[in-house]
Amino acid sequence: MTIDEEFDLIVIGSGPGGQKAAIQGASAGLKVALIDRERKVGGTCVHHGTIPSKTLREAALTITTLRRNADVFDFNLKDNMKVSTLMRRLDSVLGSYTDFIAEYIRSHGISYFHGRAAIVDAYTISLSAIKGTQSYLKAKNIVIATGSRPRTPPDVPVDHENILDSDSILSMIYLPRSLTVVGGGVIAAEYASIF
Amino acid sequence: MNLLGEIAIAVSIQGDFFKAPGYEAQITRLLRHALTSAAYGKEIARKRRRNVEGQFLCGLLHSVGKTIAVQLIARMANEKSLDLEKQYLAQLVGAFHRKIAAKVAVDWNLPEQLQTTTVYFKKYESAPSFKDESAATYLSQLLASWVINPANFNAVELTQDPVFGYLNFYPDDAQDLLDKKDDVKAVVSAMEL
Image 1: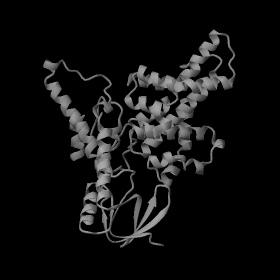
Image 2 (image 1 turned 90 degrees about the vertical axis):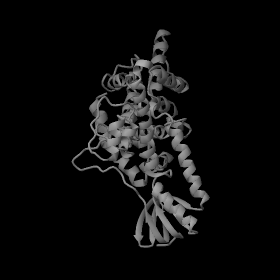
Image 3 (image 1 turned 180 degrees about the horizontal axis):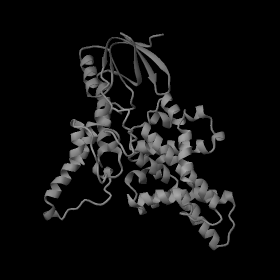
Image 4 (image 1 turned 30 degrees about the horizontal axis):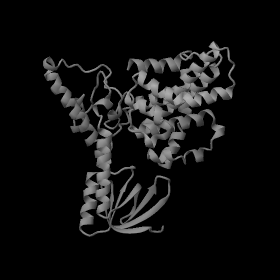
C-alpha cells in the first residue's frame, strides 16, 4: 500500500456537517481533504433532502393560500398536476448552490476528491474513484460526516414505483391521487403535510 | 396520467398502434427497442433511488420520433406507390425523427421531463434541464441495444461509456445493471410485442 497524499484532516462526506468540519479545519491552518461519493458536493441536504423538499413545500404552501382565497381567485388545481411544475426552479437553485459550495471549498484551499472512502486503519483512507482506480490518503484526523440514507426494511419492498422512500418521492412525474405516509418523524410529517 | 398510460399500454400491448403497412418489421424492431429501454430505465431509476415510472416513460418514448417517421414515410410511400429501399427509409427517418419527436412531445402535452429527454438524451450534458434524466435515458437505450444485439457489444467496453460516470455509477453499480439483463428480457417478453 503506497500512500498517495498526506493531510492533517480528512473529512468524509460533503453535506453541511462535512463542509463545516472541512472549512473549520482549513481556517485553523490544517491541510484538509474532503471526500464525497457523489458527483457534486452538497450531500443529501442539497440533492435529495432539505432543499428539494422545501421547494416543494413552498409550492404547497402557495397553493394552500390560493385555495383559502379560492372564492376571490376562482382557483382550481389542474388534473394531472406535474410535480416538476411545482419544483420549476429547483435545477437552477441546486446548480447555484452546488457551484457556491464548490467555490467556497476551493477558496479555503481544501482538496476535493470524488470517490468512495473506506477506512483502512486509524490514519489511512482508501479512495475508490468512479472509474475504479484506487488510491490511499493518510491523515492525523478523520471526520466521518456521511449522513444517512432512507432505510429499506427487509419486509417492505421499496420498489420506487408503488412504494417510495423520501429520495424517490421527489422524482415523481405526477402528484399521486392518494398517498399513505408510514412513519411519524420529521420527514414523514413534512411529506404528509405537503401532499 | 391518462394519455401517458394509454401510450404505454398501446405501445406495449397492441402491436398495431403505429400502423405502417409494409414496414411492420421496422416498427416492431423500434417498439421492442423502446420497450427494452423502458424496462432498463426502471432498473436504472431503482439503482439511482429515483421514481421508476418517469424513467420507464422516458425509455418508452425516447425513439417515438423514429416510429412516427416510419409510419409517415410508409403512408406517403403507399400513397405514391413507391417501394422504398431500406437504406433510403433509414436516411429519411434519420433526417426527420428528432424534429418529429420534439413536435410530438409538445403536441401530446408530455410532461417537461419527457419533452426534454426525448430531444436531448443523446446530448444529455447540453439538456437545458433534466440532465440526469436525459443521461439515464441515453443509458437505458444503450443497454437496450446491448440486450437486443449482444454480439455488437463488448460488455467491458460498454461500461466504459462516460454516461456511467455521469450518473455516478461505480464499476460495481455498472455490473449490477448489466446483471439485470435477464430481468429486463423477462419484462419485455411478458409484454409480448
